[in-house]
Length: 320
View 1 (cartoon, rainbow, N blue to C red):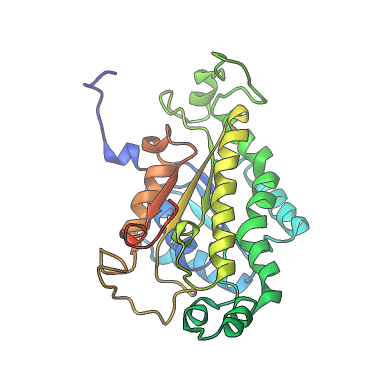
View 2 (cartoon, one colour; view 1 turned 120 degrees about the vertical axis):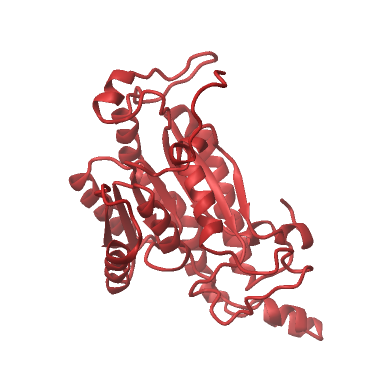
C-alpha cells in the first residue's frame, strides 16, 4: 500500500455519480437514506413504494430543500411499485432500464411491523392465554413475510441485469467467473470513458435493510417481525455467497429504533439497559453508515451485517 496516497473523506464517503434504487423510499429510514445519498452526489435516485402521493412528496421535498452542491445535477424520482408483486417490480425495473440502463446500488428497505403480539406474550398469565396470544394476528403473517422477506429475493432478482450493466459500465467483465485464482477482469479504459475513476473498483451492490430484531431473542413488536427480519438478514448473507461469482456484492444493515411511521408513539428516550446510547438513531447515524457502504471506502466490504443500534444487541439476549 502507498501510504502517501491522498485520503479524503469526500472521496471515500461519497455517492457521487451513483444510480440508486430504494424500496420503501418515501418515508422513514428509506427517505433518510435517500437524502444522504442525494446530498452527497448521487446521480439518480429512484424511490419505490406503494403510495404515489408519498413518493412524489418525498422526491419534491428532497430536490427543493435538501442542501446540495450547486454543481450537482442529481435527481430523485418516485415509482409506484408493490414489492410483493413481481409484475409491478418488473415494470419499475423496465422504467429505470429505459431511463438509465443500469443500477449501481439496490437498497431493499421496504418493511412492515406485522401483527403486534410481543407485549401481550410477556403479559400472559396462563398457558392458554399465552397460546392464544402467540397466534394473535396469525393471518397477517403472510403479508409481513412477503414484504419483509420474500420481496428481498424478488426485487434483487429482478434488478440483477441492471446491476450487471453497472459493472459492465465500470469496466468489469460480465458473466460468471469461477475458479481459484481466477479474478474478474476489468478494463479501466472503459471505466474512465464512462466517467469512473480508474482506482474506483466498486462492484454493483445490494444492501438489505433488516433490523436489530433479526438477532434479538426478546420480542420487539411481534413474533412475525423478528422472524421475517431474521430471514431477510440471512438472505442478504446467502446472496453475498452465491452472487460472488457474478460480481454483485451484498451487505445487510440492521438498525435499532429510528424515527419512522413504524416507531411513532414510542418513547424516544431509553435507559442503559435498553439502548446504552440512550436514544433513537438519527440522520447522522444512518447517513454515515450508508455513505460508507456505497462509497469507495466500502468497496472491500461484502457479506457483512452492519448494526446501527446504539448498543441494543449488547444488552438484550441476542444471537448476533
